[in-house]
Structure formats: C-alpha cells, structure tokens
Length: 318
Ligand code: PGA
Image 1 (cartoon, rainbow, N blue to C red):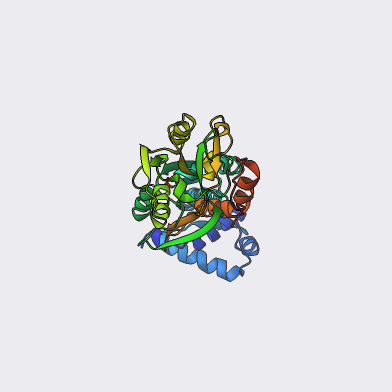
Image 2: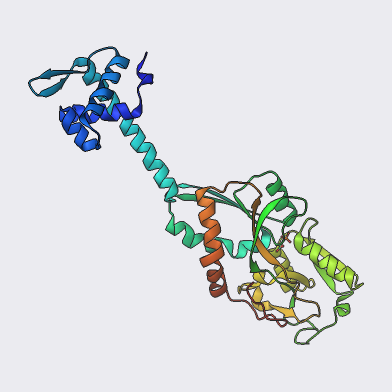
C-alpha cells in the first residue's frame, strides 16, 4: 500500500493531531470523537508503513516519518487552497476571457457597454469580432465565440436566442436631398435613386432587397460598400442614398450632414438578439455579460446615445 491509499480526510486529521500533539484536542477541533481520530491515525500509520507519532507522557510527538508527512500535508493543503481561490476568483469574475461576435450595427453600442462591464471586472479580457450577418452565422456554426449578436436568429442552426433591443433600418440621404422634409414618401419614388448598397452576405442588404422586391421597386445600385461608416461618408459626399440601421447614426460629424427620409414601409423593424448555440454551457464570464446586457446594458444604450430623430413610427425598445 502507498500513501495514495490515504484519504484527504485522514491527512486532515493527521495535520490537526500533529498541530495539537493530542488525539483529544484534534477530535474537539474536528468535531469528531477521540476514538474516531485514533482509528483514522492507526489506518494512516498502516498505509505509511511506519509509526507517525510517539507518545511521551500525555503528549504525542512526531517521528521522522511523521515530520515528513506533515510537510507533505502542508504542501497539499496549500495547493488545494490556491486552487480553491482560483475557482473563487473565476466565480467572482475576477479573471477570465469573453469572446464576442457582433454584427456591424451592434459595434456602435457594444463597446460602450463593455466599458462599465470591464471596469467592474478588471481581470476580464475581451475579444470583440465585428462582422456581417453571414459571417456571424458561420462563427456560430463553428462555435468560435462565447456570445453572438445578430439582428435575427440564424436559419438552420439550433440556438438559444434572446431579443434585447430594436435595430430599425431607415432610409438615409444627404440633408439637402430633394425628398428631405417630405412625409410618407411612396417607396416607388426611390426607384432610380442612386443607391449605396452593403456587400453580399450583409443582413441589411438582404432586408432591403426583400422589401424593395415585395413592392416591385428596382434598386439602382451605384456603389457597393462593405462598411456602414463608408456608406455614411459616401452619402454625405452626395453619392446616393442608402438604408442603414438607425444606430449607425449616433450623432457625429457626418450624421449632421445626413437626414432620415420618411419613406413608406420604413423603418424596417429588426431587433438585436443575444445568441449562443443550443446546449452550450456559458462560462461564468459569458453568463455575467449576458445578464448585464439584458438588464443594465439595455437601459444604458437607451439613455446614452443620441440620434437624429426618425420621422416614422416611434422607436420603442422591445
Ligand atoms: P449586416 O447586419 O452588417 O450583416 O448588414 C447589420 C444588422 O443586421 O443590423
């Protein structure tokens, strides 16, 4: 038999007995009976194969083997304590990684949410991937991140999905545009307008093409751009109109040169969703971020960003 046959409990009883030099005192500390302590120590002695204590008068003294075992026990318990602390830290969100993948429009708000979250949990490091809808879905399929934020749940992928905020798509034009200021513009009036379109694989593009097709309006694509930011610049530069998420228009220098046209059937109502593959066990950190976004995060977005007014329906949070 080797020491591996000893139980952690026996080692603990040994360590307390050695500290007190007495079975009776060890029994008191451990809330055990004195015979139980004595039996445990007999079994441990058998496992070690050498006496651990010698009795002089009423007091127990450690033998050489006992001293060796005590040092070993102290090492083991110290390691276990460190392990316990590491776990407590993880549970207490003192350290860990968070991998997020969000669609292009969410990049306007998610970094703002990350600020207070990371301040609260300074030991957490975050990797944020920003990409279009098609790529987000690819990453969900590949289980590449902890949490995802698309505008609509992916088809043919089994996911847990929680809708958390409106993401309305609006028609954006330069502020001096001929349709600027008009109300209830029929969608047909956009036929022939030079249009700046997002790339293939973009969820915005898909939504725009679907709506225009439903109304039999053909789109005159003048320019295709893979970034909402570039599209804003292009609109401000007079290259055409486009459809963007209202969130892309959080006030900045370009946005003051842009206007939202009041076109019928707009805004296209969409919603950001927090998504992860069904059955995935969220890490403690991911779960904390998930809860934070759904509660405080939502309020924070609503109160911290200012946008040019949308002319159409009220943009209520879901
Ligand atoms: P997209 O998605 O970047 O794929 O167009 C944006 C959105 O759905 O809000």
